[in-house]
Length: 519
Ligand code: SF4
Image 1 (tube, rainbow, N blue to C red):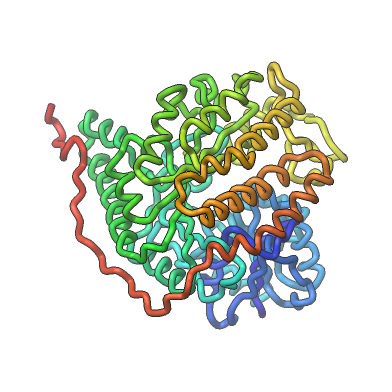
Image 2 (cartoon, rainbow, N blue to C red):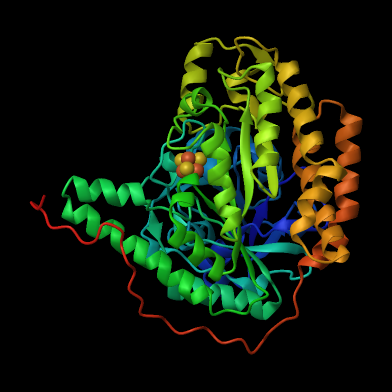
């Protein structure tokens, strides 16, 4: 029995930005008795069905955006006599759908790291169960990825996870509901070993692909202290210390390494954390700004973010402490008005952020927004090509609407057009060149322009343009740029690189230790 792991995608670029981590984790979870699994990442090239033989096991990982393509592959694989297993966030939320439409024999719900070997054993006997509950396993049970299987010359960034779960509860995000609100943080030893392995292979750019790299804020600590909750305080303190320990070890790695992660804006209040990030070569972070007005932040349950002047100040703090920001903004919130678009791009430019993404509000399955939206559409939602809007990912791509929420004052088309203009404005050559001024030397600045443009092409037009010629042109352009761009990310392999030793560090906790019952 051969094991295939397929990452579905309708568009292939030959080169991809980031390694799909789940494939390498499940490869590690695949018992060696089956041989090395065959990994197919369709963001690189399409799956070759001829390689799938009767009796093989085909694992397909899906999220909402690639579910439809995943179902096509599942049906074809089943027709070839393979056992088909779906996993990933979308299959966890809609297991019946994978069975009805994707030819699934089995669906794994939740974390696959530990349960995958049992799934394969059942497939080998020809008796897979229809549902396996992987659940939310402890961090100590996460599988380290098998990077020995990665095609080194295809990816710009590798991906390593240090923590799963996020304590926040943003209305548009499914992470806290599917990965849980308790941060499940890996020990620094296993994380460092993976990173060293990747650097040995020549990866210099590594995404710390976490839900939220900053799971404990100073506000959390202060609250536990004020509530005199010793247990909570100790728990938070220990999580925070482990973060610092990891960063201190990352700081010992070669200087040419560049890490990128995802954090909340509250990290801007924690200068000690930002300085540790800088020392650890964590040079950039995605920060969910979402909205620039208090009303917009309230719309998405993110009122822990700042708005107005203090927002610009907070974002500038990251940069002042050596952490570049990829700011993420959402358009189409009920409180948005036509002037919100200009105000947003003005903040994005004034706040010294290096990259930005502007997305249109979309109700994603597994989120509070989705539940509200589904309820609002009622028992008989509108249909397109016979498919209810509440299963919008099943609507053929060309027919899919770009906006789903009715907006109180703007049409969907107006929001789409204004969003497109914001992308064009933020990524105009003049604006990119100005932003590149932090780089010394014209070669470096040109590389920055190239990377900014490819980012814009890959993420803006392909997801948002209605005109298919523009989508095709963007895809071609991105494909053409992707190859030279990938070379900019490659490093010379360092086969002799050693794993830095653990560091015993004491972290000063603001507010100091508390005693229950003390004033
Ligand atoms: S958007 Fe970010 S901060 Fe909010 S719940 Fe999701 S991961 Fe957490």
